[in-house]
Image (cartoon, rainbow, N blue to C red; front, top):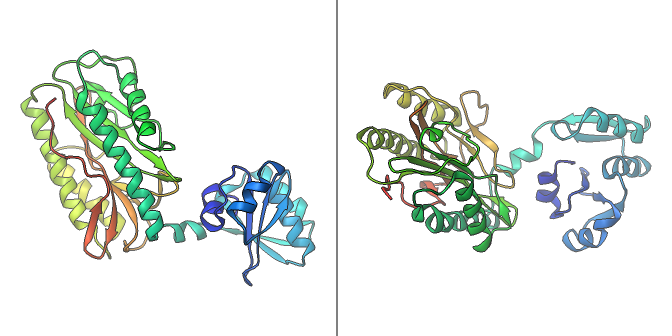
Length: 334
């Protein structure tokens, strides 16, 4: 394995340069460079650790010398140049076999320790929403709000932001992945914030849309449409549901309300902010299962006017979707 998240998931090693081999017999080897040898020994005490400035080729060469005849490589996590280096290290003594999504499929279902980390990341995110968004006032800029969200998450215990916060005022709220600008907040503006904390390697994802001052009728109507769709999709996210069908449920409801779907319904969350299972029209993921952590995030966007998205991160349980982000979904008029 060379994908950083997969190496961490299977070995516990959190360094930025490493490769992992796990044999059918359970033999496991971790390769990293000299900067991380002490860290690797502490985080992966049960593994043989190999020092190499180029961990993946070094690991292949080590396995070749040990008599390994075939090694799987993660096709999604190597470049063409890296593949050439691996073939050179194999030196015709080892057959390299492409693999796709083997570890990602394992990561889709979280254990109790992972869910605890995700829950804490979501608690930090909720706290930042209350500390920043609920205190908005006219004149603040989108960039300032994004910076405040990041600072509030760090102050509450996040190791980092899960991704760069999305903050959109007024017409900018109609751009699904708007990058914050120096636009100032004015009375009557919709405010869309999409952000999350990272805690112990695990990510949170929360979107809420509020309005500064009394909401206009069209803003209340738009928010109510999205809130209803999100509630219905949360109720449908139960074990056995197909991700593609959940996305279809959301897009059909948006279309029936007279609007155009703009993006997929959601995605898995874990060591990556976007991971399996993806709730999209083209998703080939199997049925949802207890322990999967996903987002439910329908949105409706009116170009030039404003948009609404409501998103929760939650865990699929035997009883249904359990939201890990818990701040109110009501349209707040600040």
